[in-house]
Image: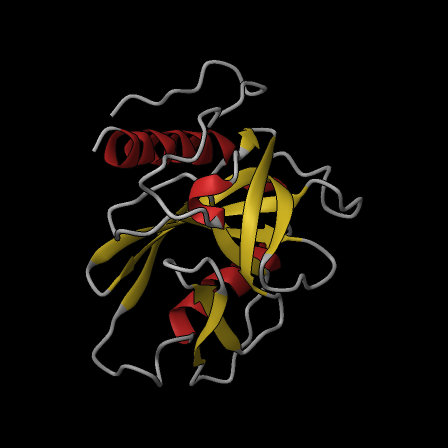
Length: 199
């Protein structure tokens, strides 16, 4: 699949919401540029509740409470107008100082990606920093983060389903930098376009 990126400042999703799709954050938010992507936050940093978008209505619902003694290490949600092999939009963790309420849009700059396998399915998580947070917005690549922060992200995803589904295996394959994140976002935008705009 060929990425559509030409220039980091190009608008990635300039099209209007298709008439056959519900007007929700997934389908109706033009995500902006690679340097400043709109990210829809479902789960606040520090939450033990797992919220997710109710796709038909566009509301945010409580999906479940985490069974393990862990909390989300960053504001967590998805990048609108993207699509992945798990039939969902592309996941994103947005690093910043404070928690953000569910249903909020944040501007994020992608600095890397965590590739994991959840129940035998590959699952990419984009790691971004909050563009408007002065403590984080100077980071340009995941390699610049403190090593302990990477370990925290990894440990959370290894542990968060352990007590919930004993037969579910989660492994972290690798962490990659900003260039790989850019490619994965471009591919997910292109797959969305091919899936939803040319049905």
